Length: 411
Image (tube, rainbow, N blue to C red; front, side, top):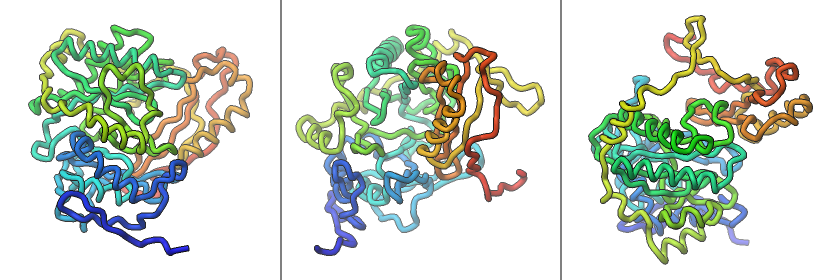
């Protein structure tokens, strides 16, 4: 048996990109190696750069493989190659980060070699970091919601966009949901874009009550599709077009034509099938940069709808939100498998409660830590008869993502 290669070089346009450990298997199920993934991004570069090119991006690195949680690297490595640009983003917290900006196929291959499966660009161009040129509609289904309901909500969202002079471009998220991308003129602040997105979400809920929701708090959504407007906040990124997602089948976030949305399914689009699709038909979003619109319509609708309802706050002066739902917290864990295990252990201790729970009552949320995700597990007892609701008890697992970290002026 020959020894595994330590490195190889991949031609990408005018550059040769070093790929370390090219034979390392990243996706065992389809047998895809690090070199296969880099070659994929070079092959679909025209489409991938339409989504991520010229934008600062957070590097979401799966350095230890699919079985481990990724870490998020905002700052570009100091030894980045000259064909990778940078842009310095400043955040409300007062911090800043010089982030990577890729502009060609070589940049995509370099990012892939770092262990980045998906591409996570901001909604701004490197040339103007204060004015987004993209509004992002993220249709996020709650547990128990099937694909047909997501599709119905997508077409309602398309109708709202059309009514306000905007063109939506759909793509699979690469997981269970759908994204709709909307190019806008870079004339509005992040706050305005987020308000426009929230207004869109509220109008979709108004037109499709029960199917869609704009409620930010997860326990209040029921079995509906959440139109996630907060993906338009300044610090947020989403997996862009042609991103490989960290699922065992190497699923891809894939651009669609609107006439495909009802007939296709996310699981159809994997690295091998998207390579073939792209070679045969190119990018369905090829015209997205020519369909640039205005937020005037949605911002006028925001004034018409008035301020969104805000949740009540605790009366102790801490400013904490008070949930309208009877929640118990089950666990805080480092990984999702640990979170799911903790939930099952809690359910085993409360069999009388389990028979009343609906799928959307089990809340397992990925929470952003300082550089990685952690998981919070809660149960909504809204469907459990009040006399049978258990009190908040000791957490099944109590992981502290902030342990050992210190901030100036904060205990």
